[in-house]
Image (cartoon, rainbow over all chains, first blue to last red; front, side, top):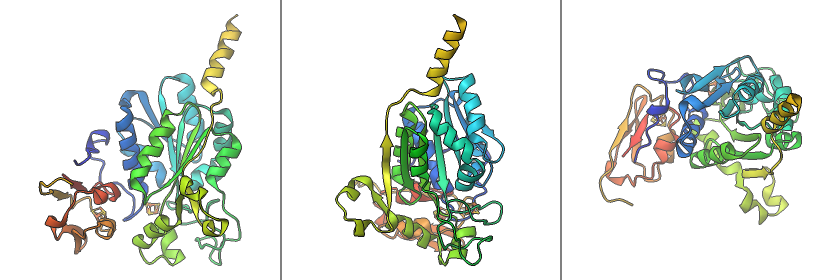
Length: 270
Length: 63
Ligand code: SF4
Ligand code: SF4
């Protein structure tokens, strides 16, 4: 049966602005299916973003939404969660918005373990502003600001999140569409700060500069590079060379910020 | 797989012609007709939903 996405999308908002073949639409569909699976209510769910192509996502969603300043999704979302701890708060954005401009907000949201879910669409570049390199642009790759190849090593977003204290970290890809909703649903259910990195494609500003002949080539790369964590356990170091692990990469239980802050309020009242 | 024939709806005003649905359909049901996707061989559809799942533009519905 065809899935009814329309009941979660603001009327008249489609077609969206994303370029042909951009994976952001695939991620948005995954998010919608996750929300549907969990039965989240529109008036009790906030979707918050910063700036960038991926950050346009909340504008299409018929929920409580906030489109904020560049890199500041986590800060605004924290405000929402503190004011209304019973709300489901979901952050969405790209790799540049999340790990460069918003890098500080990102690591501290992880450290605080505030009960929100952050979906990072990592397409290795700043798409909207003209293809500048981001902290997630691979070494050697071309961007409008690294025309001779990027000298920097890229962030591993998942490792960054785990290192900073996020208590649920998962990774999927835009190619593996059926997995996206499952990872997001599990992340939303997790009590604490959960991060879902989706390896995404930007055919317009990344693909063209980096010798991908088509969207299909980019999708096939995602298909080939991904190795589920379970499968990786049985693989040798050589076999894993150049591969990227997908699935739930990390999970722990730890006190979360809103619960701990409620205790502070209780103590202050005494 | 169900035996009832599939119904594939392509919303042409949403389709951006990315080829994803055509490429990843396991039974080659779809083709590009000019700028937009179109159904070439409906009988071959096994309703696996791969095209509907992967279309970034909400442009395909399979039922
Ligand atoms: S520029 Fe890139 S990231 Fe932005 S909508 Fe187009 S393909 Fe997607
Ligand atoms: S995947 Fe969607 S947007 Fe792309 S060609 Fe097929 S119907 Fe059109």
